[in-house]
Length: 270
Image (cartoon, rainbow, N blue to C red; front, side, top):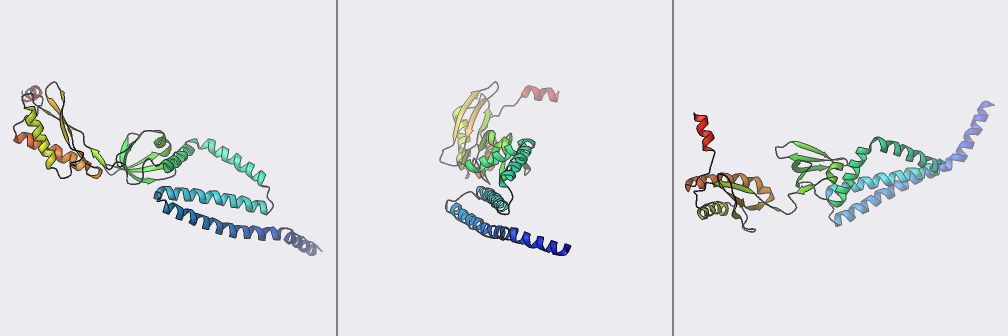
């Protein structure tokens, strides 16, 4: 008798929940296929618009999770779970997690803003939060840079999106700001000609915009010249170091003195 009663209950459950389970399975299969097709369509649309690769992956992952959550809630409603209660529980859990992870949520929001407004992209040389480096990876919560000395720099996206960002790559060219001081006995015109000759002989210094050599200031022990060559962004450090070395050699060859503290040197020798 007990066995017959359990069998009857089993049949009743199958009759009652069987169609719901089958419907839930059908919704999962069809919904997954629709999500897959939708993501493919969005991907093609992004490819046509030439979206940044980082932004494309970020948005596709976000859309994928949102659609799957909607699908799961729909399936739960189909099998008889009260979705209103489920939504209330989910909201409560979300609130608790949000309060515990305010900093992480801020970083997530910062990552979204970076992806949307694109102040920089992978491969750009930027300066932010007191750090300078090439953007290596833009993640959901952090951005990774490769520093000039090949060190990895990790900056939270919240701080990054709320602070000043200098992007050295966007314009394609950079001005190299150099200052050289010469003796008051030096001829200004000759000095400018010697430095300008160095700049025009450098293959990586651009002709347009043209380099400039001007008197910057009359300092205590030297006449300081502002030297401003332009170059492609990737040539910045080559131009910086080569011009500095060649200017020193050219000034020495022309007999133009670069002042240094003679009094201090005499005291050392004494």
